[in-house]
Image 1 (cartoon, rainbow, N blue to C red):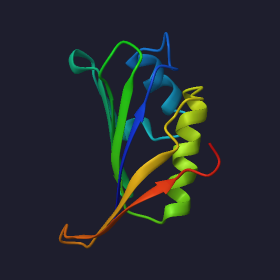
Image 2 (tube, rainbow, N blue to C red; image 1 turned 90 degrees about the vertical axis):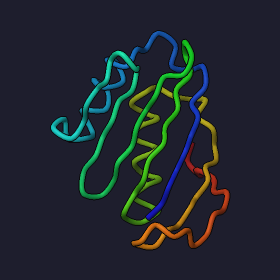
Image 3 (tube, helix red, strand yellow; image 1 turned 180 degrees about the vertical axis):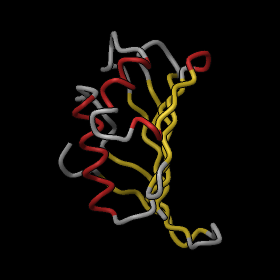
Image 4 (cartoon, helix red, strand yellow; image 1 turned 30 degrees about the vertical axis):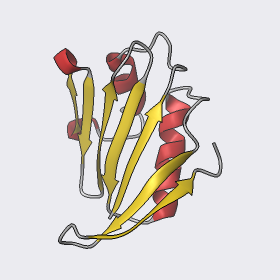
Length: 116
């Protein structure tokens, strides 16, 4: 399993959580996605991954999630999310944390998103 946390700062100006939801349903199954409007949080969960996007300031968002497949698929998903959000200022690195099935941390290292 891979844990990731990415802060997205400032360049999604004018987009609310509903806009983000609308953008992401084109690449993710709408049935697995929910929007908690009062808390400005979007949640997604399916067999392979779970993630949340949380608004923590006017134009700043925080993406965190767990992914249960391989790293190349994860990078592709992150790229698709950033493209759908018209995001050019996504932080180019994330903490890559491998865990076993019981949730024990096997390793943590800084990784970079090569094609952003």
